[in-house]
Length: 356
Image (cartoon, rainbow, N blue to C red; front, side):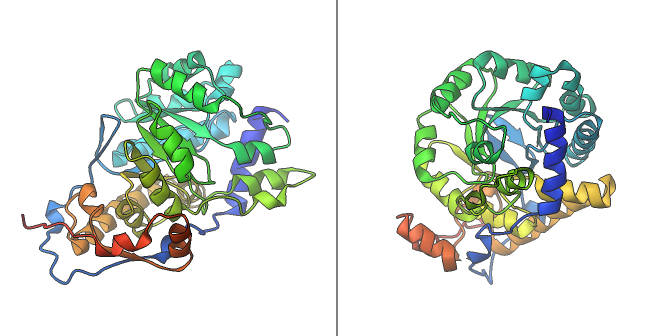
């Protein structure tokens, strides 16, 4: 099977397998503020990652490209939405465009229709610094995502089996490219040990890519004659991964992703310590099933709902959300407790003073 055919397969199975919603975010509950001292008109959704100013913490996380016209059409519509809604967008892995020049347009279309927006390039940790530079140049990228997909590769019949030297290559790439580097997981979560390792590297941010969204192990197992079903439930749930990443990499920005669908998911993720939140599989589902206009409407509603929730919490900014008290219970509380991440500290945080 060609790489392009595999990309189309991934889209098909991503839509058919859906999202598990095992993110752990249902275990997070905000402490209500009866006197928040807030105003919806004063809420700011802006955030900063790697020196880049984002008007909103929401962004379109890496999805596709390299699969011919179908993936080009998807990236075009996602880029049009990103331009309209003024949110950043990451393209899918560009390795296929380096191998096959006819696939370049499936990625460059994002920049063509969103000339002034924030667009992120994407490549795997197996890449060389020269390849990383090439994918950034290809789309005039504002940042570069380096994706970690060990479990997907192991589950993939034609996938990689050697993962030596990943950290060293990430360091070389980060020192070579002229844009901020974001290291991201692809659905299995970043633990505090990995976060601590990345904290020592010259990267700008870590995208948790937690368990609970599109399951690439399940997708590859659907494609395989000898499925590795033991990988289907592998990984750190998104909520736990956010906290572990914040603790493991205090010197880096944390980006939440993995099964995020609603404004409540986004605000909870930010309150756990993330500075931005990526959405992919759910946005693709809305686009394919309901159309481009519905996708724009959905993203704009997300921003409105986030402002309402932040007003209720007395949080004027994303940084304020990092201070609001919340209670963690259930499996997420247990996970964080045994991992020595002190889940109880969230319940006694001092909320921000909006009036001041």
